[in-house]
Length: 238
Image (cartoon, rainbow, N blue to C red; front, side, top):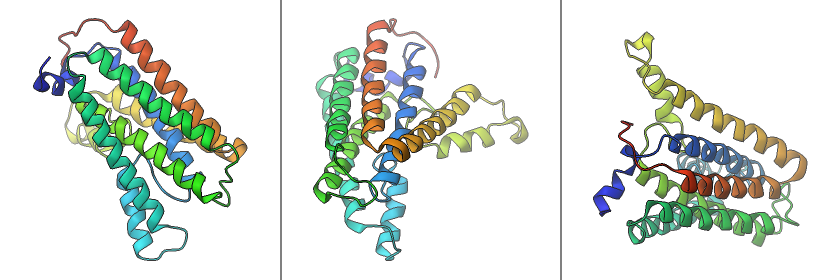
């Protein structure tokens, strides 16, 4: 498999890949709940929101932190670099590539869950644990985004929904369209929503450690099951 072939894997994938990406979308909702509710109004998965929060911090809006937002942005970019390097290094084996990414990403999330033990999300203390949590989760999500970007499955980025929602409207019957990939688009929105609801409930009831551990477990198990069960590439048109 050449580098260009790896860039096209989103067009030649077993039908179970969308299900895997939907499960990963659920974990994004969990991570967003952790970062916004427990790490001081910062996004570590959604960099669009994080850049907006950075703007609020520059405008000195109370409750937003320039340092926290910059830390998340830098860590996310570092994770994206790691993701790009792994994709190039393991381009000869898609299964080994995805399994390696899952192991690294879940390890970062499990490390974050352990770091969160003894962390006070209400007072954002200790500060060292706060920034460790921001760094670990943002690196994990940067790695995730770089990998999913390379897979290039339409409407399943696992972290952002803006274009997915735009597609629902622009391609709808009301707009004269044929509603392509309607179930996938709705499923992506529902998955993110479900993860956010579950994450919010967990953060408020038991803190940030559990949603981080759950995210790591889902990421690792779902990806390894997919890799183990994936059929040979089909001719499905994404």
